[in-house]
Amino acid sequence: MSNKTMNFSDLKLNSWLLTQCNTMGLKKPTAIQQNCIPRILTGEDCIGCAKTGSGKTLAFALPILQKLCEDPYGIFALVLTPTRELAFQIADQFAAIGKAINLKKCVVVGGMDMMVQGLELSRQPHIVVATPGRLVDHLDSCDTFSLKKIKFLVLDEADRLLGGHFDQQLKKIFIALPEQKQVLLFSATMTDDLDKVKSVASSKVFIWEETDVAGIATVKELDQRYVLCPKDVIDSYLVEVIRTFRTTNKDGSIMIFTDTCKNCQLLSMALNDVGFTNVALHAMIKQKERLAALNKFKSNHVQILIATDVAARGLDIHEIELVVNHVIPNVPKEYIHRVGRTARAGRKGMAVSLITPHDIKLLHAIEDTIGTKLKSYKVDDKEIVTILTQISVAKREAEIKLDETDFFEKKRINKEKKLILEEELESDKDQLSDEVDAGKEMRKKKRKKQRKVEKRVKKGNIWS
Image (cartoon, rainbow, N blue to C red):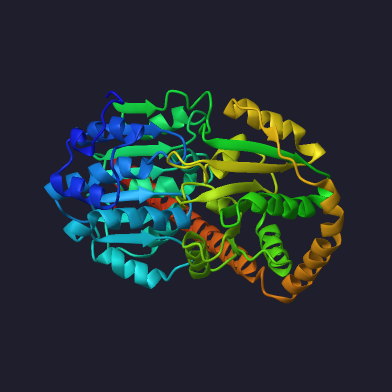
């Protein structure tokens, strides 16, 4: 379909959906919506690849809701996504559009009460949005719901889901699904995994990829910079980047990405201590607290969010004006997702990456991938000296406080649970193996006895 289409009405959507789009302030469809929605409505499987902030969620939500109206039943569609926060966001978008038809949706993610989720699933919601691990937990533990009648399977951030980390869970989920279903796969970066993605869909699949997504994988409105700094003073440079940005933008939201849960928590505590109010988002925080932190940031009550890559994909937070890579990611694709949190839907934004001398190769790999050279971001090196002592002391105090908490308790419990499950699985295998061996031995004895009887019959001495 030509990109000249200017209105949602041109996409053959029902009038109630057009009204909902208008109510939500959606004036015209994006390129991925223009091209994918009509093909999905005709019943085709679809693979959509477009830059972050291009409206991928609506590209599958709108046609699914239109088809649901034609034949309403639950569970109608299953949406799989790699992160909990993205699952909630997708469910919220379905709820906003489906309000007019009393849409029932259910979010199935870890960190929340399984009993409550199980009850919601038993009530047959129209849309289930889930992370693979928790959905498998429900498939293994209860039979109060079935996925055998779903019409749509959606894999959002499909390259991450199919990248190997979720293989075991996906195998179990796919067994629980019907053969006949529409498969919709969407992501911002899918070129590396396109062959694997195609194997999940049918042989007749519509593939739409943004024309320049392979050449320049970030949007033109994004100003991409780097700061070269020694590794041992990287935290001081981070503070100076924030201060420099604040001289021209006092109220803009800032998102800072780092590598591990521990570093994320320490950085959050240290920056709070030196006067930069922030919230943290990482896997070691309880789910309710993660959602609360995200809501504070989204509502602009707190203007700095420090996160690991759990927040790198798909989250649509308006008006983020600066993304900082405190630690540059090892994989260029993850850089694209991180910086995609800003400069969304045509707005401008900036991304600044802190680069140590050891990261030069990574920087070049990122530049080759995105087809853009990063420019230097100027900070006052003299200010680093005055910041250094304060941030170093704050970081050390944060480490002492963290050691006194049960920060790693969740990780320890999860590790123990995993070991127990593995031991139980091994025990079940051994028991099954013993039962198989016993069965073989019994069949062997039976065959031996049968041969003896046959010999007696041949000799005419059956009663001996």
